[in-house]
Image (cartoon, rainbow, N blue to C red; front, side):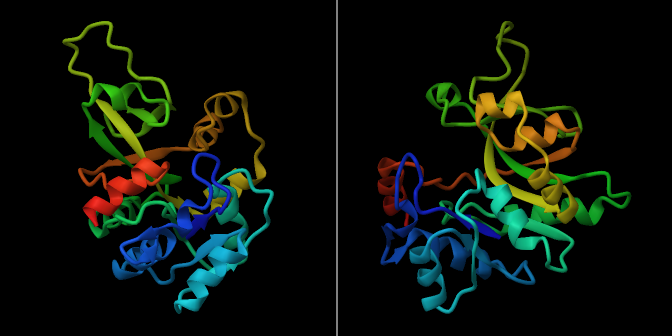
Length: 236
């Protein structure tokens, strides 16, 4: 499932911007389909423009309600009546989504025989100080088994001891859910930590869900700003 809003706050209409002769959302959809990892791939959107963009190019799309606060809510609505076990959420603004990272997420659930993991997500080791301090970069800290402890827009951990050996990890907004977990998310109200940080996966932690983080070295470019789009064009 690829949740896709037209009215993005920082860069309205970004998913319909041109990237190498095709729109950002179409690039993301085609890259996801090309992995051949999934039984089906859908764009889930509140926008007629985005819906028509995908359908007109032979893709699959669903219309959702406009009042959703986040991508997980949009996905929950879309999968509620579908016969699925595992749902992968690929962000619409990540046209460089790669097969190996998605495969690692799927493997988490294949190896989880007792079904103790509610969802999995990706993280990338970062060392750039500006990126670490940037509130638009969501950081995650994990335990020794790579289960998420917390996500924040602040630099975490705080390095009181510079020689502690602690690392910084950037959260990549690609999720794999058990269907039950994303439906629970949809029904549960937002709590103060999520409201404070405006990071949707905190809701899972506040309600006791277990998030397995998978490290990847493929960062790509998330297109949040016009500057990001220009960087993406240089890579493409």
